[in-house]
Length: 498
Image 1 (tube, rainbow, N blue to C red):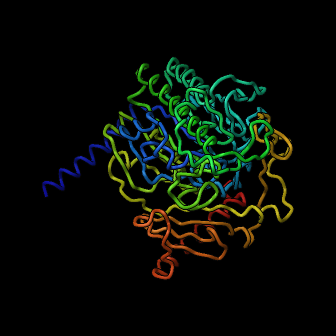
Image 2 (image 1 turned 45 degrees about the horizontal axis):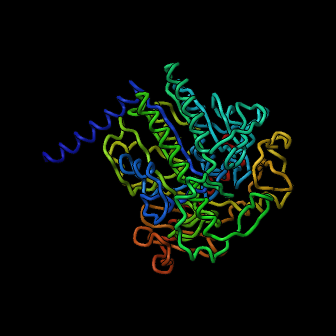
Image 3 (image 1 turned 60 degrees about the horizontal axis):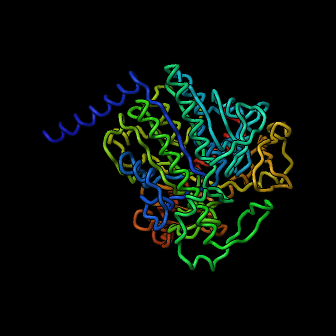
């Protein structure tokens, strides 16, 4: 009995402590995201070659989320989930270069209600970043932005606050961090808490590394030179094939440069006295792509609903709110970011379906299992384009302005799209999808249409043994949960939430 009272007192004390922190001294927030950075690609997760001392330090001193997932196996949809706390299929951000909708309520807008100064730096990719775009960062609550429509390498071309595209010389991760530091200094001078969303262009292909970072990876396995991989040519912008050895040297150099830039940010927070009460949250946006998929232990890769497509690094540092190192196997996902921050800064969630949950309980030590499953769904966009639909946004406003290396549709800039969806059709429910509970994972149409797989994800994280015939009743329960959730999502897609 005494032990139970003691445990209750500890939990209550932690709860009151964090509430006191947020009410009296709201935390600053920095959300960092790597581009195509999969779970495997950190030294702290056991990678044999990568040098990531800063991410390793964060994982050692903060909250290491070993079962952290991106809400989607590709970039634009996952970024939408961070901004809204909602699954991207609810607002038609189905795949890369599908825009968000202006009526969505973003994380920048939410925290501004609590007096935060907000900034976005780097990859946006849920619509153009130009001034006239109805889906630029400013529309979503960011006071300032230095951003790109899509991805970028060294010497990126970026748009500041909707102005003309300008080329910035240097390593792109460091450029973004330098801008973030300037932004932080402005917020500090004006005595305002801040939210900085920093979405790196690394390590998305095509890869470019600084000489000093490339030199760190001169001794990769020689047999990789005998394997060719397809990726974008830096010279032509078209697809080419190159040896894995050279490609991995460049990819790993980008990851190390990004890691170093994060270290520069952490040092600045320490020197300015902001370290103790700043939440620094790092994650990837999806799994490893084909061009980097050589050491990934999980099934699948970017673009699939298996572990290799959606399991990503996830670490949080907040010395004042997470004073002791923690490692959690609780399922967490990018959709949880908005609900977590809303609770921490004391603003109510938007009045519409939210798919993420607050992770405040992880910080308090009271959350060990997720109360409801997580749903993943890669919408079949052929259903969206097979019929004539009205554009949700004027096509001219969907034209991007920031060039990148990769040519698409004959040009170096990107065109976004989103369609009105007033009627629900049966075909709207197709596409690979997954329901992930604390122990089991049901996959529907993952690698083969009309094929279902059930995995005990605790015992079989690599998803090798299909238990669908052994546990048919459980599979039915999970599929019914998936169907109910899909009905809600498709209803949102019609615009019913607005």
